[in-house]
Image 1 (cartoon, rainbow, N blue to C red):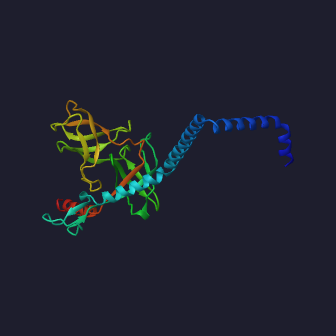
Image 2: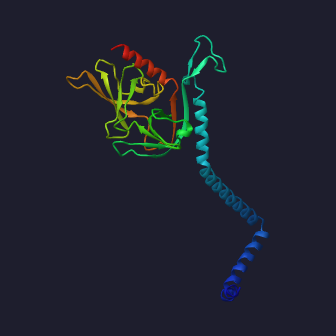
Image 3: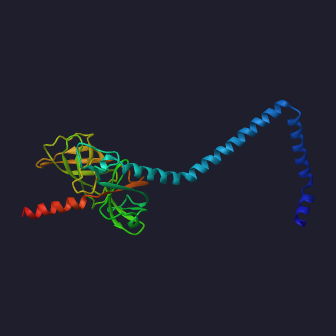
Length: 278
């Protein structure tokens, strides 16, 4: 209290001057309609700007939860796509899907860590064993192919992305159906290569590359990228194809993990056939 009194004594002239200024301002506004209108407009504009700023801050803070809700909604929609089922009867399909058997199941996840400047890049997502994730599940997003699940803990999973030297996937040219092996050369995270496409195949710059689904891991037709360069070296029977990837791996935020529920059946059948062919 003593400090406050000392403050008033020390600055009483200045405070008196400020008080007079406020009183003059109030008298001018109160007795002049023009100034009243200007003051009201200025006040409304200031209050409006403050509310707009508050709304922007609130929306930014809530953006994470909105993104999570959208990812969950997309997950539910993907699980209802026809491509997630196989027909049991080719003539009739009922709305309750009693004549269709589920083939793919999707789970949304958020990227919490990743790298793009290594030879063996990785991605970490916030879903794990308790969410039903297992190794060798496909990882995709709305732009296209991302990679495959490598290791799983209770709450997290690591993903081998396309931009990892150990990654391979069977992919095909959407226009012609010619297929090859998708690999990364370890140089630029924006590009990969499609190898083993026969030299007689019709390959054009601008062709779209999609997954073939041969391994049973990736759904058929997931976008991969666009052909930006092709070359057939003398003496080689195969094209050398450079692909610009649809995904920018430096900007991944949300992904979907796709589980092929019929993959083990496919692998068992292929193993039996390979064994019988010996």
